[in-house]
Image 1 (cartoon, rainbow, N blue to C red):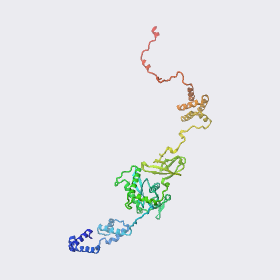
Image 2 (cartoon, rainbow, N blue to C red):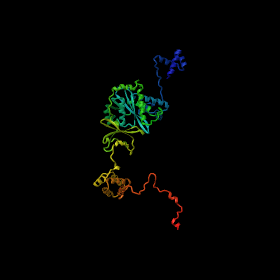
Image 3 (cartoon, rainbow, N blue to C red):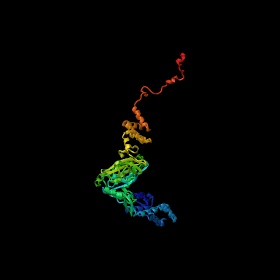
Amino acid sequence: MKSAEEIMQILDAYDLTGSFRDAAELAGCSHHTVKRYVHAREAGGRVAAPPARPQLIDEFLPKLEEWVERSHGKVRADVAHEKLLALGYTGSERTTRRAVAKCKSAYRTGRVRVHRPWVAEPGMWLQYDYGDGPVIDGVKTVLFVAWLAWSRFRVVLALRDKTMPSVFAALDQTFRRLGGVPTYVLTDNEKTVTSEHIAGIAVRNRQLLGFAEYYSVVVHTCVPADPASKGGTESSVKISKADLVPKDTNLLEQYASFGELEAACEAFCQKVNTRVHRVTKRPPIEMLAEERARLHPVPTSPHTVAFGTTRVVPANTPMVMFESGQYSVPHTLLGATVWVRAHGVGAAEQVVIVHVGSGGPVEVARHDRATPGSPRIRDEHFGLQPAGALERRPRAKNAADAEFLALGEGAALWLIEAAAAGTTKMRVKMAEALALAKLFDAGEVDWALGHAAVHGRFAEADLASILDHHAAGPRSGQHRASENSSLTQGTSGWARLGQQPAADTDEVSR
């Protein structure tokens, strides 16, 4: 067979000379060839196919077809060639490759899946899927990608994981960005949606049913391992990963925090939703404004599953356990149910605690990630606390205790300090203090007890000694230093050291 360019040269040579032989001489071929192509042009361009020549592989074609059928069209030509050599085939590998290609093409005929264009209606379908996000602080993230079919509006969110609270929170945020809820949601067969398959029928997750009922949406799943059934999100995930995940192709730097990834996802959505779509020739954000009229209203408050995992606050300790860590909540929530979830990854990871009351959901606490054995506590969550075990106050148990403590604060302080010092015969000394209170003024005895406690004097006669000293007042002849003098011994006596003492005058007169 001549190439198209050669045929064009042959016909051009014939038109120039008008002779088969002269045209053949110019084109470098047989005049019979020139005649055949000229007659084919006059007949409408149909050229008779050259007769098929017998080949060495013809007798092995049934075996090749058998191997292609057994492998479902996946057998390799080099493997088939080695098998043919073992059967006595003497042809070249090139001939084998051509024969295998023809057999595969014949096998695929009638088995190729034909895709019919999907014409979506406004407000009907939303698809979502996941993509592998970048690694931040050694933790792998997830990209949640949602695609509204009619307007081609995309929502890309960064998630920590694909657990149910994270997915439901992402769906709630998606609905609020769209300004409404579509009739159907199509997704993959994740455990958050499908618990198992029985005879090819998907068994829905019970928590998903509650979520779908709350938002008045019908959730469908695609055929397992069939990405073509949700090609809209598959393409959106591919584009999102190409623009958001750092690679050599986009020259992106690594994200320093989870917040940076969230900001990048927001900027990406702004870019793709405001530019003209190649299919609709309109920006998706403009089409979304029209599609909102067909969407259902979004509930005022999110579904509680979107807030995280439920925890019941103990009746006497405002602490909840979440992923091996303890976190404090306001003491007013004792015995209440709260929802706990994690937000962010790495060093910026936080634990968010939400309580749903009569006024709706309220975030009651936000802590940094705790480690086992090191709880996260805020003092204001515990309110006013009574005196603890280390700050016990004396309380009278009998009449003698009440009479002693009635002396005043000094008596109470003496009791606390004397007990801490391990003082012996404390009840005897308390009785002596009561006896002294009858001889002296009770206020003076209380004052003396306070001073004894401060200075650690708990012996038997210490209290009486303090009272006597206080009652006597400043004694005569007591040396006190003024501001201009000192009681410290001087050094003048050392000046006479080594000098001869003066002789007595009486001995000299004799």
